[in-house]
Image 1 (cartoon, rainbow, N blue to C red):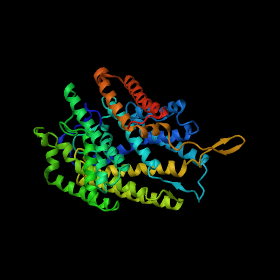
Image 2: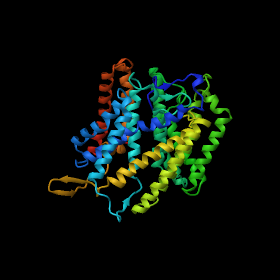
Image 3: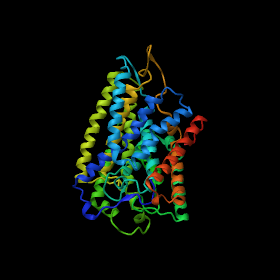
Length: 459
């Protein structure tokens, strides 16, 4: 799912001590790396919300607020990420409290079956992955952001976890044979894409880091098999509530197997020979993926259990999420010292870290887009007085990704390969890196925006 060339962090053996501050710090730093993109969504809602959703002018302004900061802050400006996030956050909060009217106490919050917080989370995953998979091939991309070969919680380690969560949020528990018959529609395309990617990489002799998914497997296979196995496992329960127990049981069982020796073998330097050994990274992570997938389905069903909520009901739900998120972060910090955080095996620490990150993002999105920036709450100040103005709830940047997210992801993967084969990104200076990345991001976002304008939906 991320770029395959020189995108992993390698630590000396004496640095792989699980009982260290490094993984704790990485887990927090990586979450904060996503904040500039989140702030870009909020700024776009505030500054561009008065423009038509399909307006070219709106798209261009939103790219300046979302795409450009993302490119700069994951490359040459990475040292200023926290400063940028702090300054912009203060400005946004100040503007909202000065210009946005509070919602009336009797306001009803329309959650629906596809809440906008899920859409925003999905857009965050697609936008961040699009930037990272090419940026990682430039010298200006920070080493600390690159994927970990064993234990670690870097920014790129979040990628596959976020995709599993977003897939689960829009999925349903398999209830009967009729649901099973529909399964190939969503599973087969992912497996075909995975097979096609493996064939192409083998044909052009493109280097693939075997420590990520193994010799033959890749992110598409992981997502397809996770969807398949998760759907089959969900037949074991009789209600959505029981998914919580099933997912936690799988997670603990998976950790037990990893601690029994499998985890050590997966991360060892043993040769990748024979199908099982050659793909031990991808195969060993499947049950952790399934546990995270089922947890995501459970959360989605709980969050959308009521289509309409009162202010009291909605804030009560957010307080529950906040409490769970705090407990998850505490478990992340404990796991960093006990089991470690390992994307390569999807162990307990990694799954809880991804849950903590996603719940934290959901809280941020819910606060701004549901509580503060709902359609009835925005006011444009005029010299003669205040007047209410209704506008779309989400940026066009987000809406276009929501409509054709997989198309955007496939296009970004294709262009990443083309740039690697033609522009030699490993030998580009800072200015060239930013220019290439901006053009690449603009093209990927522009294609799905044009598709949205023409009402074209592929995937």
